[in-house]
Amino acid sequence: MKLNCDMGEAFGAWKMGLDDQIMPYVDQANIACGFHASDPLTMAKTVALAKRYNVSIGAHPGYPDLVGFGRRNMDIAPAELKAIIQYQVGALKGICESQNTRIDYVKPHGAMYNQMMSDFTKLETVMQAVSEMDPSLALMVMAIPEVEQVKALAEKYQLTLYFEAFSDRLYSDEGRLTPRKQANAVHQSFELIEEQVLQLSQQGTLTTESGQSLAVHANTICVHGDGSHAVEAVKRIRSVVDGAPS
Image (tube, rainbow, N blue to C red):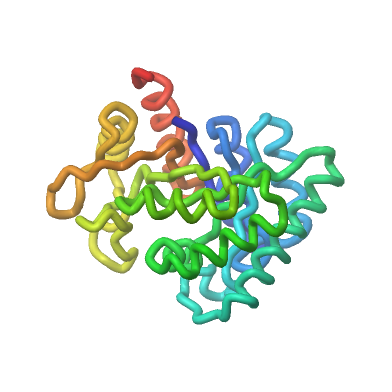
């Protein structure tokens, strides 16, 4: 089980995340590409940091929504959605090439990610965008109950998939993340986060908001690099994953 983290989300003088402290503990860095967060210098610094720790680099494109941090839903036509994804991936690709490294995968951000996992028409558009850019790039998607439908779409575009679960988010009975505005949508205690990660690693399940057991076939876990206790949380998650039976 790999650990991935959203990174490079500072913007100008505005600081976000503890990337320099988190990077040594993760396997995959989802680097923001300028639309929901980040800027060229931040992207370059984050790529260099990932390269230093031999962390796999992923492009993290989002909706053009700096004010809303890419978390507001947008109704965007398929042609424009493809273009804004390819624009962002292309920008990070260029920065990676300048540092003699490369992008390994794409993970859409925020509202774009949530919308594509509930609307497979959007998911297919995202897959088209990635495949047209570089079919060797993997696509990170949420591990949802409709996994076979997602795999079938990816096979159509000959894309490799990373299936992602979340270490600190509460899931609905339908296998989706509960809205952030909902109470207890984000786990706050180390103990609850560790329990969820251990359950995912050992049993391939998690407990939903109503207490049901949900099968989750994931091969990467998202951790968060912001917040006052982020570093301690990531260290604990790393320890749980490394200590779990394979």
